Image 1 (cartoon, helix red, strand yellow):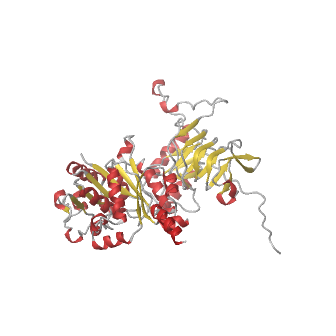
Image 2: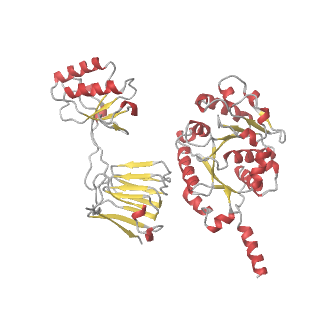
Image 3: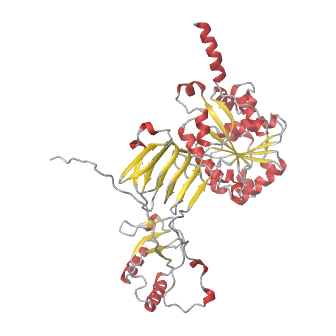
Length: 244
Length: 271
């Protein structure tokens, strides 16, 4: 019997960011767990069903201790989805995966704590910018994007006046415009926007993707190389067309 | 106050040390006071190319660690009296270079010399980032081939983010020095063309140094190519690059194009 491997549709690979609660344990863990229990006693179910990331950056601990801590947290119904700031030696294959590049967000309010004075209210809790339907935030980059650099703008469109080098990447929630040669990677519509497009004056890209549907340099039509091109998504098909 | 130049590339073997020595000697021959500083701690070569390997007593690490004075570590060239070398240590490793120590040494050299030329180690680790940290001008040495060009691009990104100038929000003055250029291979398409490299890196061109046996011969003699044979093609390219560094607007000639022109004439005669 033979297995016929057909590739009707590629697997979708998408990046997405979520807000998680970051817990920062302190040594010794027993004392810290006691304080956590105290907090939980005042507000049952605070951690229930919340995604929690354990931030162990700078902690002098090891894999065994960390595994025990995760077990202890599990007993308290705190489920850890990832670990931030751990050395690779501290993580086992049976433990939550390492997470990197976390970005700070406004603080979670501690439940049941002492009533804070109104004047002491944390300033970091500024409300997120209200997005009106018609205005898409965008950034303009006027320098060439060099190899190893990454332009990450999940909020909207990215316009680059210059080239994107081989080994560089541009990730945008909206569309990507490159007034120059696109040699690196461009990923548009990463937050699920299938209407996002990629435009470039000269296509030499290593990889292009819209809403998780990607094409590598090998899959691109050879006659598009070096041309001014736009790339858009039609259903699940990545389309390319020559501009002008 | 002197100017600090870093000669860098990311990739190894492209000609950083050769170019540091050749440019340093070319600038010093015009009467400028020049010091070439070897930042490649643990793998030093600049002393060999400068022909000073038998005269090294103290080095950069000794000065940074306070074991020697700067004046004790500086070696004056025997051929050009305004040319000095600050050697690297061969026995220590790069961790001995501290940011504070490097800053102090560079500041002291700046007051005494017109040009402080730092020969960066390959790579993008601490040795390379310390060498570029206090530079006013960067010379990015690149060979006309894809891996060298991409590494140079990476280095340019670091020059624009990891240097004191960049952190102050100023623009780092960057120049491209295209080395080991072989006209015949470029013509056959085996090498990237000058325009392609310039288009990818988009920084101004300081000069094009042709691949030549003269460079190897000079290195083995322990002499910068601009001192060993001033009339050779690479030496002329370095002399012109040095003049451009000083602000002269010389037109750049692509090696081989002239010969190509003569070749055509002779070719026609022969036919």
